[in-house]
Length: 263
Length: 266
Ligand SMILES: Nc1ncnc2c1ncn2[C@@H]1O[C@H](COP(=O)(O)OP(=O)(O)OP(=O)(O)O)[C@@H](O)[C@H]1O
Ligand SMILES: [Mg+2]
Image 1 (tube, chains in turn green, blue):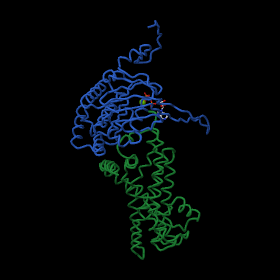
Image 2 (image 1 turned 180 degrees about the vertical axis):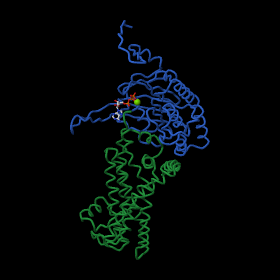
Image 3 (image 1 turned 180 degrees about the horizontal axis):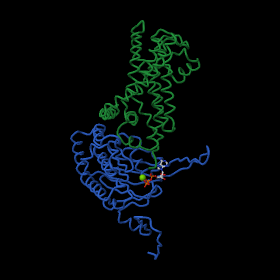
Image 4 (image 1 turned 90 degrees about the vertical axis):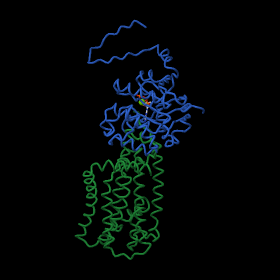
């Protein structure tokens, strides 16, 4: 953690030497993410409800998904560059330093501009919370931050697992992007618009449903399409911990398979 | 254990190489990069580690730093098993890869040093003292604010050597530290390394293809070929062993027609 902080701080400092360029890339990151929401707004200019959900409710799902993803992407998004280091052997230089390799890889060229996406998600989430009419209870209030952090944990596990596969597979980064970026887009819509099989898949196989669907539907007071018991809305921290543990295992296995290069 | 800082006992490294021999067909074969090497290096010694291309020098150094895990044998550096406790060992060793920088490519040299200062938890006074010494002896003063990628090879190498020494390592591994340097830069680097070894008592393991490096720096030299240790002893003894065969390489300024070489026997 300490090494991660130190390296990130160094990149941020160097980034701040080019404030304008930072502002532009951060804005670009914000805008790309905002297009997704613009598409949803456009849809609602034609219809009142989508899969039985109002705009405010979908904005809530959207905001939760984007914020969770944004947190993971901001802190671990750099891991996508690992594959290159594995192939050209420059991972060697990280291995001779007294800090965990995973921290160094995650902080490598730390991209603060990714804060754009996070900001956009957080704004939509705030907007949804303002216009939604929710019967707030203590449990619901607590579920909200737990949902965001656990969601970030689940996405974070995907980033780490994706990085682990980059040790062995050349195109692992693309596959991982399909799951992370694809996953966050999927979660922006309510489960009712998808086929049952898909919903089952992202609940029991790749547990993306625990990022926002289950806890958010609980907060909104909506039933989950697969008739899961209500308490499953409180399981995201456990699911996140499990995913992170598995991802950590994959990472260790991947790192052990690293064999450097001949020159 | 005693005073031996580096201990190798029958160390091996086998690479499993897969080669594409056709569509979907692959052939597997083993490369024994290091094939049962044993030696020890006492604290404070400066040893040359030489051999032809592909002999296994870099592979040995990678095992000594913990980058690669040996396929067999026993390996200890400062009493630590490098691949098991890589991060703990990292504080006690310094590494320079001539072929590749350990500095942060896009950032000014000084940023890399500042980060090392914090990452290795070097006491402020030590850091200042070491940095000042390196900057003076390796003439880095004018380069500190230059991004690493803009440095010339020789400048970068000096920057890398300084980076490897800021945390007072007990062992310094140098894998071809003089590769591509001009005569003056080479002399400077050598002088610096000699002072380091005599004044700070740092143990140094050096690989190079320039025998002058060895002549000027190392009393002891190890020769490896095909992953095996062929010679271990004083440099003078090497000449006796090597007497049987000599290679003369002539670099021509421009292309010239081949010359007839007349052999008269030696
Ligand atoms: N990562 C790797 N994967 C497969 N084979 C490797 C790998 N690294 C090294 N080798 C092989 O191991 C052998 C020893 O390589 P090594 O890099 O240790 O040689 P070297 O003595 O450093 O040579 P040079 O003087 O050219 O730097 C070579 O045959 C090389 O092809
Ligand atoms: Mg080499």
